[in-house]
Image (cartoon, rainbow, N blue to C red; front, side, top):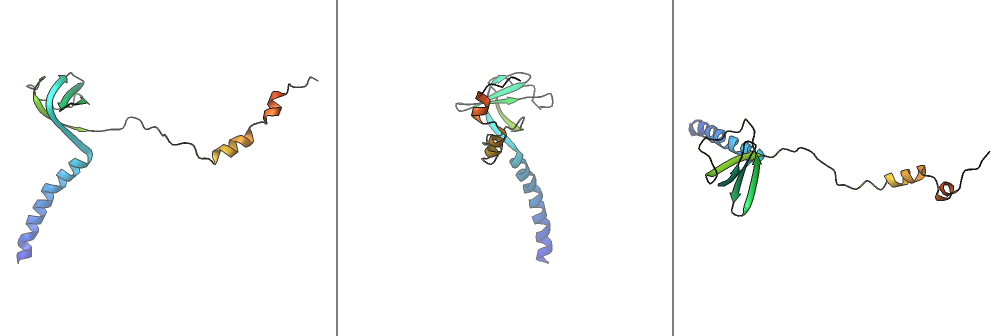
Length: 113
């Protein structure tokens, strides 16, 4: 009979913990005074660090927030572009060298007919 009482409590606890864990994986937050605010960004100072966060029309910002207000901003990071910094594989170099003409052939002038 005790397991029947424990199960609903465990399910309730899981329901509370699961959303918090999901939020933490994709979102971040910063708390501090607002240093600057425009229609497109909000700048929050955390100690000496400056957090410049983009805003959109969908951002929920209370009307009373102004420069100097202490706020907590929740934000996500989204990749705009990914550039590879890996060097090309060494296997590609011999194939490219085989296609190239020898240096002597390139240096000789073409014969006239």
